[in-house]
Image 1 (cartoon, rainbow, N blue to C red):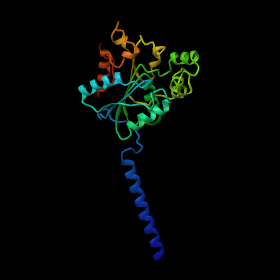
Image 2 (image 1 turned 180 degrees about the vertical axis):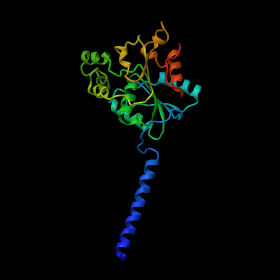
Image 3 (image 1 turned 90 degrees about the horizontal axis):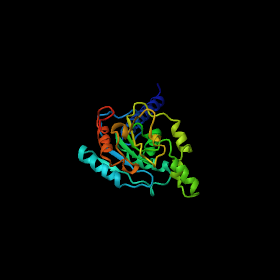
Image 4 (image 1 turned 180 degrees about the horizontal axis):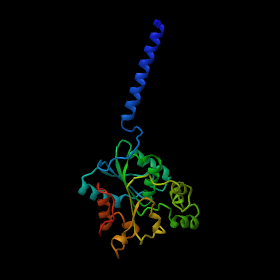
Length: 248
């Protein structure tokens, strides 16, 4: 082999070695795209996503209980604006909060549950260890549709997106829940905000009406994050055992 050809193949070998090293480092560094699902014994942060309007008080109370009983890093997200804007923009807030975590548990209250569902359908399935939704209008709520009809122009973008059959919900309904993702959906038959309340049910999830676990209990939509029965369900679901129907 001539000296020129030896030099060429030597340079080519070095370039290929550098390329392999770069690809390897890129795949291992935090934030690189990942596949698969976190093991159930890898407990990362717990991220709580507020509902329409972005109110945090009830979720902060729930976060305090989670911290006290589990010791886990628990954060309530602050949504852009007041939580009435584009749900897809809220997905980015959740995605950014989970960016460097190898594993996260997400609790989505009301419209925050829709945000969690959109996140798992887009890029969150590889990070989500467990998802818990509380009174989430996963198939829309008639309240949003009625509000838009009664007060033209008085239904912000998130309100429009939460109307049954909206383009955002239609696309989401067409996608199956990622296989093997533990998902607990808790809802109340007394809910007058998510109508019908059964809109919170999701194929592939463990769907629990509070009244099926604790017969006779009355839980309004706003009470879901703080009602003792619901809080107990949430705490149990954040463990490592498979999701199951709890006792009251």
